[in-house]
Length: 459
Image (cartoon, rainbow, N blue to C red; front, side, top):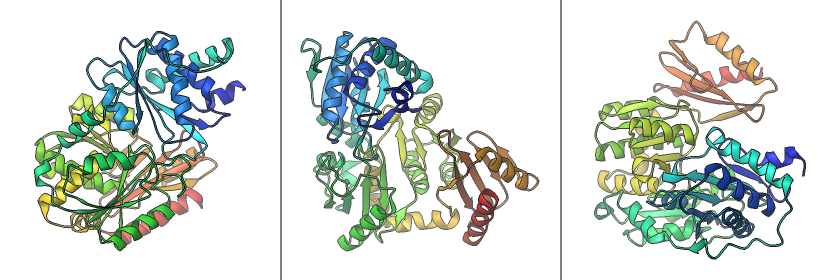
């Protein structure tokens, strides 16, 4: 492989690539050795894998690489990424690595890494150095004949019981009513772990694509695909469920549908979860991203909390939460982070909190979010493919500069006006500009401004 191909799988926050040209067992073996050399863990590393057909072999290669450097490993088996966060967050653990490509196509795989305390490893906190060391190792040696864990350094252990107990401790189990839930696991990893939680709750459950299956017989588990949203929405209505849940492949994100089958924009979940957690932890800080924010800020301030804006991205959110001792952090992309879960993101805790809220509140999910959607209608994220993204951003800013009440450059550009605001960000990796617009109780203004911005961006 050329050096460019070796580097292609390394992203800002994780490793993801097409098998076998961008990622393979030898490369992952070298990544294991590089992780050991760069991070120098003084305690065992938890290893887990998703349901993909290549995941078990990659995890074995990873373990062999870590063991070759004298690092102890604990294989927790098939799991979701948050279960690695749980395992790595335990006393006496040195970190964790999850083998997963989440919602990517079936011929992809990848790695998500954390260090002790489940603290994130990103490009500037170790991942870049691991990348360079991996390149050096691949150039200096040949692939071994087989990837066999060192029995003296490796063990297998289930963390399921502790993980389930931890999640249930975050809600008032006794308050949960016999709600009817439609769940779509997309044949990813979520099914058995949802079941392990649900058996402790008085829920009625209708299951869709529930069995883990690495061939992805019903397409890749990506709830952001419109065709999958249509399928889940119909299933919610047909089942007459109180609400619906869908997960991506490694279930670190979850997506919600109300009882009418309406997909709930992730933005409104941030305010809803902030509200529920502030009831439990009054006056706490809540971290949110700047793409859409007015609904979140109003919810938080109304309940006496402190709304803290932060640049998008899990390492930024987690660091800001630690800095602020925030009880919760939320991104409109359906990543939800919890102080009492090692400041990590979870795709199971959000639905537990929604079930708790609906049980205690008495209203339906549509009633809970309708007012928010009327008060702060939003566009959701709209992506534009533009040859010169920087030039487009300059053009938009120049057009609105004199009208704006405030302009902020925390993450892309956010411009605020009396009755509407927008955030515009360019991708670091492709010629794409991402637009989010919201207004104060004015859907007509929203449509007008989205059309206006589209005209400025693409002509």
